[in-house]
Image 1 (spheres, one colour):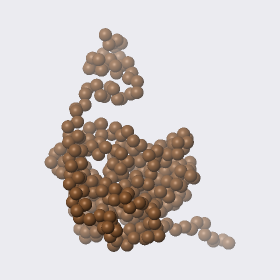
Image 2: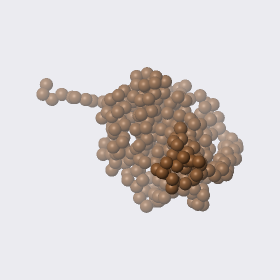
Image 3: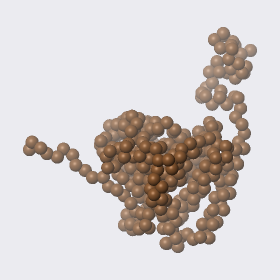
Image 4: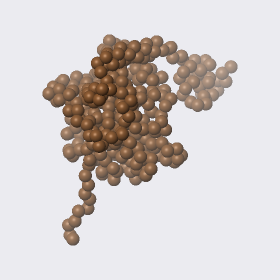
Length: 362
């Protein structure tokens, strides 16, 4: 035949618990034990309170620019819950819920935004926050490559926004992961805006997920405000990565309910009706409704949780603000695994004037 179909496929959209409280019992059967759902909700409420306090810290001059996570907690939290400790969580800056679930101390995030380098010292398999747009996807691909080479069974799971899919780093990471059969899960948090640029300008295709198809990887779209759906698709992607060394592209459709950062004013470019629509789709509201419908949560528990959250976050802020100041020696002690002689000289003398003059440090 002179004309034939070269390629044809579909992209599934997964939703288990929608904003109207409709729960797909078949897809959600046995997905998350009830006790874990309660724990996930409690964690989400703490993260939301942390977010509000972090915003106030910036507004009161006690912290630098801060990007609120409000409205996007389910995407990273669902992924962190579905992954294993040996897997890498490679994030940008709207994944607090997942990082905290993984075991990152929340004060580390505050220290990061306070300009304290110690906020980037993370002892678990999670990388420091990536501020340049798109760079973390390459890091996740490299970490996954290392895990495959070592045979340790770990995978890389990276998060980025819809705007990052227009960056060259994104395409390079996708190309490497697909062509080298690397165990990577790419999670695009499509929150409709790349600062003030709407998604429709970033991508003319009907879905961001289609960009994954171009690299021959399994691609899926998911309700990013549905923690059940996030757990399902990330589990499946992790199994594909672990068993077949194949990457997956996940488009998690969500929305940032706050400004891009505290340096932004979204009211200048965002329709208030759009914001109102997405406020009703808040992942925390729908999860609480699900719990209440099953008599797993009530108002008394909610009030008690608020009090607990206030105490937890107050302690986090106290630890961040009262951390001992760094010493002058820190730059020398932590720059290299083995300190070069020239830096030992600088550390002893606290001078650089002798560099290149053969000073022996006596």
